[in-house]
Image (cartoon, rainbow, N blue to C red; front, side, top):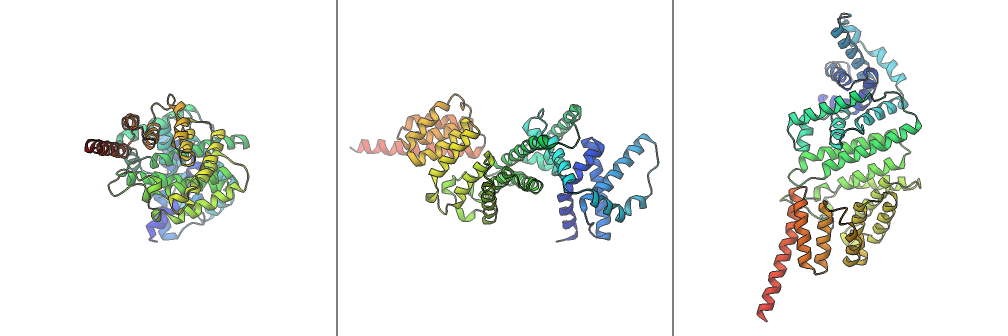
Amino acid sequence: MTELAWISTAISNARPQAMGALLRYFRDLDAAEEAFQDACLRALKNWPKNGPPRDPAAWLIFVGRNSGIDAVRKRAKQAPMPEEDQISDLEDAESDMAERLDGEHYRDDILRLLFICCHPDLPATQQIAVALRIVSGITVKQIARAFLVGESAMEQRITRAKARIADAGVPFETPGAVERSERLAAVAAMVYLIFNEGYSTNGGEAPARAPLCEEAIRLARLLLRLFQAEPEIMGLTALLLLQHARAPARFDANGEIVLLEDQDRSLWSRKMIDEGLALVDKALRHRKPGPYQVQAAIAALHARATVAEDTDWTEIDLLYGLLEQMQPSPVVTLNRAVAVSKVRGPEAALAMIEPLEDRLAGYFHFFGLRGGLLMQLGRNEEARVAFDRAIALANTAAEAAHIRMHIDRLIKESAEKSSIQKAR
């Protein structure tokens, strides 16, 4: 690893701990971020010369805090800047900080930082953008590219979000056990949102949005290190790994969607799958099932099937039934209908989703599945109406193209049928 690479990795890994602590000191996102950036510049200057510190996070916190205090003093003209050696000679200070900043302290700081980004007054897109900028350190340009908006528009979005957080007066005290549990659920949901923002894409946009999936996995692993005995965080991490493992096979060379059953499973990441399966098994041993664990167990059944025909659809149906009890939702029922169609046939699945139409009238996947089931039943005219509706609701070009493929198939079948009738 090059010198610059190891420094970049160390700073990236230490960022959540350092930002969390600096936020606690300064109680202002902008001040904390500015202090951290100053500390990073000093790290780039000092670490190549002096070698890596024993605890990079403690080093960055100490230097960032001094830099932030300096900035306040300079603005207030209360005191001159300290001598360089007061900040640069960090050996004793670093040891002291490393001794005082134990795992428990880090955990509270990181959780506080993540929770602040999950402020309930912020729209989900702003929560994600702030988390990626403040917690992960992804540049505004990179975030804007992933969200398919201009850099200035994303900068304004993040600025507005930080201002709203500041105006809300979010408390910075160490959370208690109950509050920590509540915050953890909110943070887990945010991490899942970040992943879905990257996962829901089309083939052409996939390279730009893949870093969101990778960052969500990194944050999930971070949470898992902080809460090693929490089965739902194991389930969340496993779910993200098992889904992202399929990324290389999700689109063909033309950027068109490849359905799960048609994917080249040799392209799936075996390393991610193995890690995800191990986490699923570990989580289930706790016998405290939760929604993320159930979804991860479903993904695990797909991952364990060497070929699509080996998929245990009966077990997937049962798991979706359990998920319906935990999180009643028309979308969960819609997903379960796919398993039902495999186990009990398209007619049973269609009967299951018909009552959902009013609640899913604006949902692309409802009409896509309905059209597919109708097509299997030979009700081609009804299928075409459903497919037309799905195209109108498509979120990406890839989704629309996938539905058009079904319509083309219907047209071809209709033409062949007409030709046969004329021949008679």
